[in-house]
Length: 293
Image 1 (tube, rainbow, N blue to C red):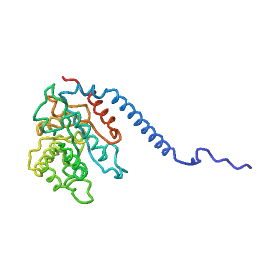
Image 2: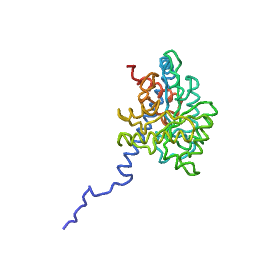
Image 3: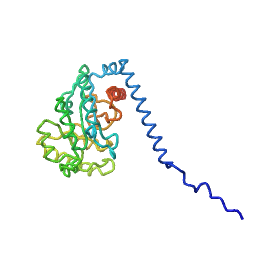
Image 4: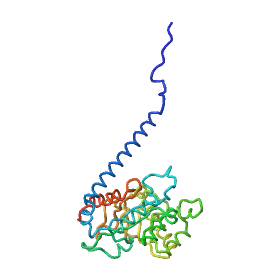
């Protein structure tokens, strides 16, 4: 009697698993897309396309969203690419912005509306209250004399401030406030506000506002929706508490627009490491700005 041959579908493939191969192919695809993006951005920059678009941006504000700023050789394993830029990248961003924009704080923009003929403005914002905002980003901001707005999540700050903490502590916030950093609220526990009741959402906003005011000694009238998540009900609550509330995406802000849905441009290292790619990110966002109603 002959010995049965093993079923082929039971034989383990040699070498990397199918999932590993798919991940590897995905990584190559992402890297190829970045190379193409860089080539396009550099070509548009050389031909003056960026400058032509920016000449149309008078009377608008580019509000940039950052989260973390890491030292250049800091490990990034476990950190989502959209969550960080390196210090040298951040410094290059500020240098490029200073050449083309008037840099100001978000609060200043809301207090002094632009006219259609005013040069474009840019605003630097950070979400959550990461400790590297103080240890890495702030020295760069101070050297360039650029203001910034940091939106704080209360629970993160209460548990922060220790040598091994990822987030700032209350003493850190007080220190930066003395040096002129502007602070806004970002809820207590960083929930998706559309997934909780309106009463809970209002409590998250009010308690976060109170925490910021107690630490800074200033009125807190700026707010950032966690994850950019909002709907009409959440925006109504924010509008009753804050002077301005920021979302994620949707281009540049046109002063006079809806202050409960102020758009921002998300910035991260892989898409903006080269100056031409950074400017491409900004002008692409400007092109996506909805027309005035």
